[in-house]
Image (cartoon, rainbow, N blue to C red; front, side, top):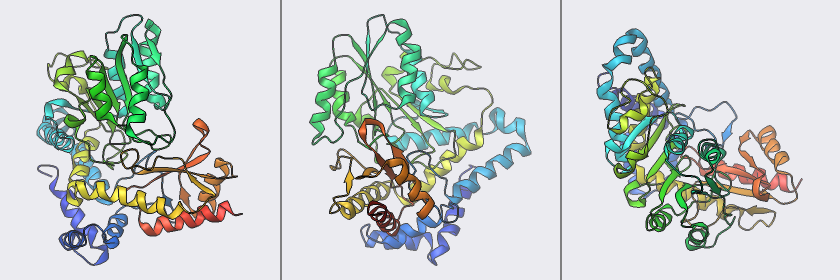
Length: 416
């Protein structure tokens, strides 16, 4: 396996051959058609091996690994079990650093600002437990924050007398400024940390992190971002949005194996952080002190690097553009149907690859069940905030034909 990455590229080239084209031919055709060649994305879909009859619109809950990443993961597992002590205790140190570098490149940051952890929840716990706050200080979390982002602040800080401030976000904001203003009004002289989702899991609303970070930093407030639904879906330059912390579950939109996470901490903010688990290396002055778990599942960590190579092979900008193309296609298909009501903001600055739609007059649990039982469509029902709507994820393995199938199913359910 050498560098641990060559195999995945070979596997990618072989598996892309399902349409009779080589990887290079397919990429060239896509470039010439400026992103309009649906056949290109059908070859991508062929690499995601879902159960027979399953149309998977639930990537926001849990992503899938394409075939080359499954094969890479299993190859790494075989290597580890062929010589366990060698590869667990240092044999893969260089390969692990290559993964860190690939992650840093993805986010346009330094490798010394990236820790390789388990998931978003761990990252939020790491931040919340580390903060040295005093009784009466405030942590700002809007009402749409994920439970796994709220619980760490509740357990590690609220019990000490820290106040958790929960402003209300609009469901269908008309502008970026409307959201920024919610946070502006909630900030007080006691606010020390602003904890925020990049993209909320409830109705797919994209929050303006850059604008909010700028406002918070002007008041000396740290900004911690739950990036579970953003990273991999859309282009994310962390130095540009200028948050202090950003944490990711790589199994969602990056299509890595499950149980691998990414944690970013700006160099100037790293002094706030202490490891959740103390083992050898706890006194490492670098960000690596946050990931010294002793034994861990290294094949999945290295397969994250393979997943990032897979992404690079397709093209980060193409993935970003495809996300919005699918969003626009879906919204155009339901816009004229008065019984299907979108509960996600329309502006590209306010939403991306997750869209939420209500079938008027139908209970969302029944809609979700009928979609699966009658059409094999898996999605997430959302009931909070009066949504009564199904959440639909448009990952790169979704095609326009599948969206047509989905909309036909929703219209049939609406009318029966």
